[in-house]
Amino acid sequence: MNSRLFPVTVLVLVTAFLIGPFFIIVAASLSEGETLAFPPQGLSLKWVAKVFEVESFRESFAMSMLLAIGGTAAALALGIPASYALSRYRLPFGETVRTVVSLPIIVPGIIVGLALLRYLVVPFGFNITLALFLAHTALVLPYAVRVVSASLNNLRSDIEEAAVLLGSSRAGAFFRVVMPNIRSGILAAFILGFVTSFNQVPVSLFLSGPGVRTLPIDMLSYMEVTYDPSVAALSALLAFMSIGIVFLAERFLGFSRYV
Image 1: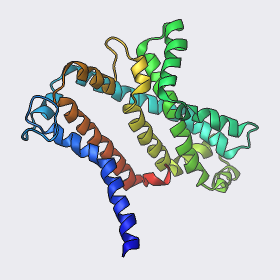
Image 2: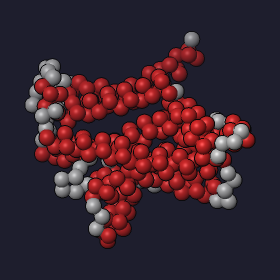
Image 3: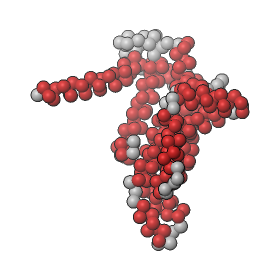
Image 4: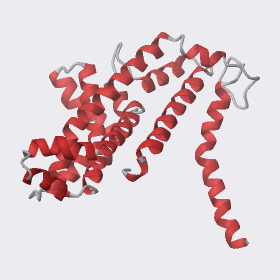
């Protein structure tokens, strides 16, 4: 009995440590008071309603959605062919390419943001929105390559070869045989990239400018001047959105098979 009690206790403590802050934020978002506090001062949904009334939140949410969807789509457009080449061909520097593609994950986001600001935006005068788009695409690309590569590795190559032997071109075999069979992996990569891009802070912090902010950066700026529970309410809504997306991906795509 004691041998089971210890691991169960550790599991409970770890789970409480991981999800405890989430419940605190949710409780603080339902406070009736005028300042962010826990335990909540009464219960009310007024701060949840206020989230939709703040214009800067609406604008930055639209920007974050644009970057997350556009950046992830661009990363997949680059990552799918790259994954195919790495999975199907013995390239001379294949492992080196894999390492280079993974660098945006390995290198801290603050360094990536500072480097892009110093060597891309400042010297070449890049538009802030374009710089953010390129940065988010680069950050999501490693996830696209890894997830799609995992899906391709689980697909037998002789199925594609059979299509070629039956008269299909390489491109035709790819679009008619390979793509339909790795569709779940591509969708999983898109969802993972979307969530990663949408919640990105360090890189966006360096590349945001006047009138161009992502939602996480706008929330940081809002808290510098206002300390009401609306930020907690928005955080809770975003957390529920992310949890819902990942839950649906796991339910219908088997998300854990790819990540």
